[in-house]
Length: 248
Image 1 (cartoon, helix red, strand yellow):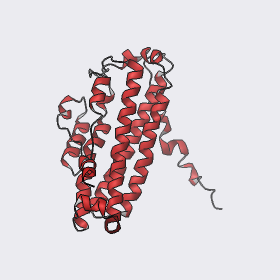
Image 2 (tube, one colour; image 1 turned 120 degrees about the vertical axis):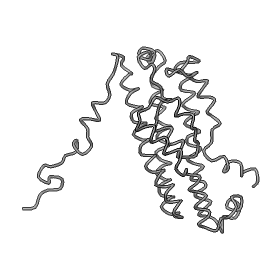
Image 3 (cartoon, rainbow, N blue to C red; image 1 turned 90 degrees about the horizontal axis):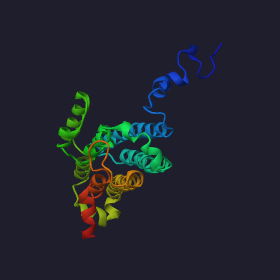
Image 4 (cartoon, rainbow, N blue to C red; image 1 turned 180 degrees about the horizontal axis):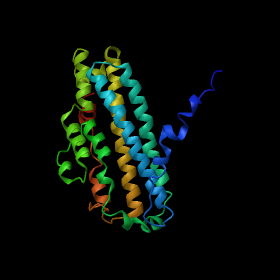
C-alpha cells in the first residue's frame, strides 16, 4: 500500500526539517520589557536574510565570472525582493516607541549592530572592503576567517568586469548608451545599481529610525550612534556606475 505524501514512515516532519525547536528557542530576553522580544526577533530575521543574500550574491558573482547573464538576472531579481523586505522591516521596529526601547536598551551594551559580521560580508562581497574593520570587530576566529576571505576574493564588481570581458570588453559608457547592442549587459548593470540603491535606502531608513529612538545618544557598541550612521550614507558599492552618469 503506497504512503500518503509526507508520511515516509514518520522519519521527517515540518518542525524537524526547519529546526523549529532550536530556532524558536533562540529569542532569549534579558528583561521583562514587552518589546524586547520584537527587537530580538527582527534582528535575528535580518541575520537570516543576510545569510540568504550572501548565498544569492555569491552565486551571482560566480555566474558573472563565468560570463553568464540569464542566471545572473534571475538571482538579482530575488536579491531585489529580499532587500525590499529588509527596508520594510524597519516599519515593524518603528512600532516600538522610544520609551519602550529605553526600558531594555541598557541591557544590550556593549552589543551593537555595528558588530554584524554578515552585514560586513555583504559590504565586502559588494566591493566596499574595509580591512580596518577586522581590527575593530569582536568576532570569533571563524567569523574573522570569513571576513578575511571576503576581503581577498573577487567582488561583485570584479564579476561584472569579467562579464564585460566575456562579451568583448566594451566601455561602460558604451554599454549604457548602446542598449541595442549591449542590452543584456546594461540590464545587469542596472541590477547592480538596484542592489547598491537598496542598501543606500536601508541606511537612510536605519539612521532616521535610530534618531527617532535615541536621538543623539551614543550607540550601545561605543559608536556615536546616529552620527556614525549618517557618516555612512554616502557609501556606494559601485561608484563607477554612478559616476558614468555624468558622461551620458
